Each structure stands twice: as C-alpha cells, then as structure tokens.
Image 1 (cartoon, helix red, strand yellow):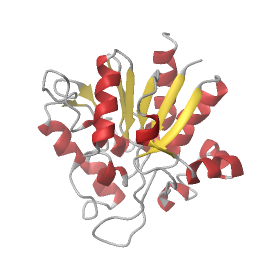
Image 2 (cartoon, rainbow, N blue to C red):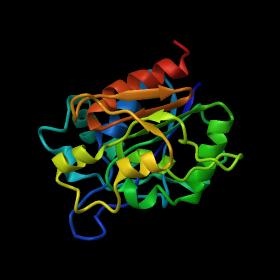
Image 3 (cartoon, rainbow, N blue to C red):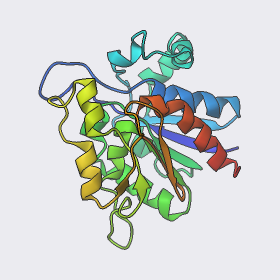
Image 4 (tube, rainbow, N blue to C red):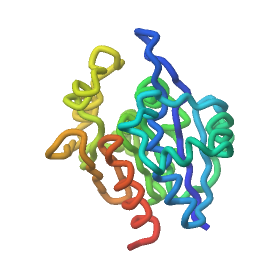
Length: 229
C-alpha cells in the first residue's frame, strides 16, 4: 500500500491584520480524494498538530468545487482537520510521497520549520516523491541537500506568483514575495500563460503546482508519478 504524508498549516490569521487565512481546502481535498480512491494510506500532519484552520475564501461559492464541498460536509473529514498529527510524531515513518498543501497560512509556519526541512531533504535524497502546491511551495525554500545546496536550485518549479497575489488582493498582507524568494534560490520558475489557471511542473521526483486551480491536475500528476505511468 502506498503511503502519503500531507502537511498542512496551523496558522489561521495574517500577522499584520486580523484577516483570516489558513489551509486552502481544495489543495488538500483533491489529492486526498485521489489517494483514498486508490486505497493509499494518508496521514495529515501539521507543525503543531491539532486544529487546521481553513481559509474562508476557499469555502466561497466560486472556489468550493464539488469535491471540496463533499469532504467539507463530511463529519469524519472535519474531525480529521480538527485532529491533525503533530509532524514530529510521524516524521520518521517512510512515505511514497510527501505533499505540502497550500494556503497563505503556510507562509508563516512552513519556510523555517526544521522538521519540514529535514523530512523533505531525506525524502528527496532517497529518490522518493516530494510535491508542493501554491504557497505550500514556500516549505521548499530553505531545504538544503547534503551538498549544502538548496533543493530547488536549478530545478524547474512553480508556485503562486506575484501577479496572482495582486489578483487575490493579498500583496500587502503576505509576509514575503514567494515568486521573488523562489527565484532568489536559483530555481527556474514556470508560470501558467494565463494567471489563475492550472499549471503543474515535474522535475524528476519533485512536483509543484502553481495555484488552487492546479489542485485537480496536481492530483492526477501525483498518481501518475506514484504508479509509474
């Protein structure tokens, strides 16, 4: 049985305001659904464990697609989000995929988390799949390999870009510019031709998705990678 670790944020507000943020729901549900359909074992963990705040913007009519709505309305799934595993408790297990789900909350607790850095480094250097979507890509920024180089240096990846941040109206809320940070690490950032449309990049066993609208495609690509198709 294939095993997947999904890492999500514990942060529910922007640091410079009382505006709510958190996990972007679809960036969890589509991969979760694809994994469950195929009988994979899925663990949901967060840096602190416990409750996972969900960005209210991801629950609005325009953004809450059928898959996300279905899971959001399931008591058992909501209970999972209220009781995520603490990352340190599950970090030493073996996984076929480690996936960093997005949402603006991740910009605060992902980049400098030493446990995230350690397990991503080990996973990647073991030749196993690492994936991240949207702002979850920020969790890759400070991962260094055994040779001292940043993991994403020279890699073709994607992530939520600065123009999309403008469209989302969050330029003055976010703690840093993710696009600029990715480029500063020496990565080759690829963007969708049309902002806010699906884009998934695969570089070896590193898989990245650009934005929430990439969630469905990300799930498909991850399954193909895991099953060697």
